[in-house]
Image (cartoon, rainbow, N blue to C red; front, side):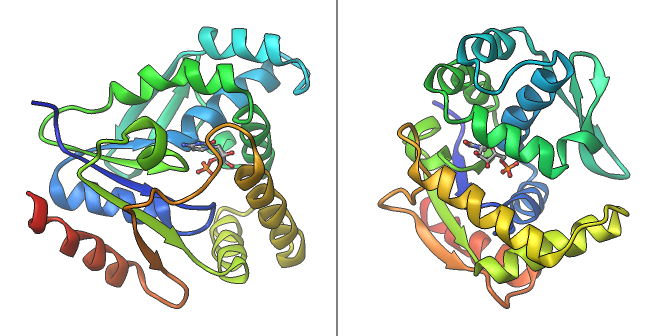
Length: 223
Ligand code: C5P
């Protein structure tokens, strides 16, 4: 039988990444950061100087880009794009915006489908993204949809980036988050929306441990 899957979808800054990694670690399961795949293609397109309006070139770029995840005992997994460690570049708002533009192209999404499904291996998978529960793993045993107010999400991003020494303003971040939300929610293919059966958790004002506990509490019921 296929390995069990827990999907955690939600908008940027909802805490998906942190929560998903923590839950995967706790369970000893594999972890898929699907946003990193879109970001990797965005970064590779930038390296190749591609026009974000040239869908055909971006689709070719998706097929040509190699993406590997390497565990880093010191922290988050490293992401190797076309043989280069692109972990830091992937986190920039430029990469996020490029990812969101590229993610609206149906052929790009189709090209990444199998690569995402390949992460499903025993003993289980925690998959983090926008369409994990709706499109990539519709048969997932557990589906979670995380939200948080736009202000709180901007604040979290602000702290994250400040810790990394990136200079940003709260206002600019809030505007970027709202623009990316609108683009992700309104695109024709795989728009950001909760799977019908997803358990929704609003993480506004909640600490990481509280949310991790709420997610883990869902599991025994269908183990
Ligand atoms: O989650 P993250 O912020 O890294 O995702 C970057 C962008 O990639 C999102 O804004 C979204 O447009 C796209 N994405 C997607 N489907 C996913 C994951 C990410 O369309 N499953």
